[in-house]
Image (cartoon, rainbow, N blue to C red):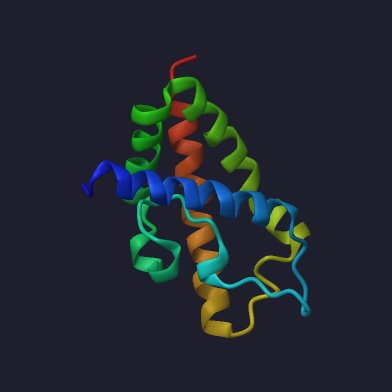
Length: 128
């Protein structure tokens, strides 16, 4: 894994992007793009690809969160992420529909589903 400062910077970028993403209502005038979505992985969003967003990288991200912020913060972030990536929420925010190209729309939709499902698995496996 990269050094701690590097991963903390990525985590902070993720948190900043989440704030923006959560308050944005997407449309033809404000389009979503793959690189603007706060994917929960330890890679800079400016260079992230769909292949980097997978079950293992999502688990690694939330393990990192637990290790640096503690279990209560991990649980809080997972709860927020469950809402953020829920397919119904994406539909109401028009995330996928607002993506400019068909290929990127497919990547956003498929990757969003992977993230949503893995976050649910991680959250459901947390101790009560």
